[in-house]
Image 1 (cartoon, rainbow, N blue to C red):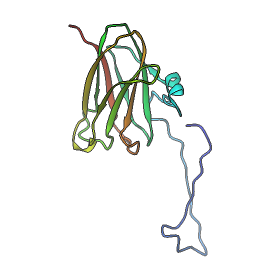
Image 2: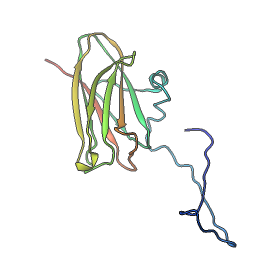
Image 3: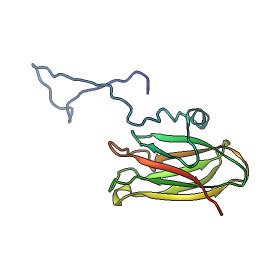
Image 4: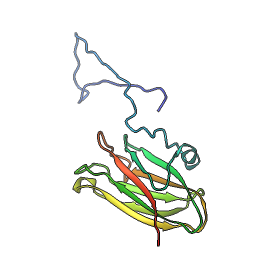
Length: 165
């Protein structure tokens, strides 16, 4: 995110110092690893505005790229449609991220939550479906359970499909 950032350097135990000598510090701005960013803000209203639009029937690649990252997506449905939502992080064998997926109305009412508590125990595959009473825009959010883990490589695939009867 754009803004001012500060770095601090100190002795590990804060009990030693050097009378002479110097050190060199290099900071590099790196590209955002998740091409959907920015797609979250400080509150639900900004999340709705920043949500990445997705098409039903398509797969979207995403990544929890930093602590506290929440990936928001927006899609539209018709009344009576049943949509399946699936998240998969294959081919990763494990991930520190404990995935949560939430489905919300435009009024921030949660319609579904999928969760996986321990990403380190293997490949994550989450799936669920919802039948919508009203047509309109809906929102999917993907995040880490405690907002304290992220992925340095890999990521997830998020797929939405229309269920037919």
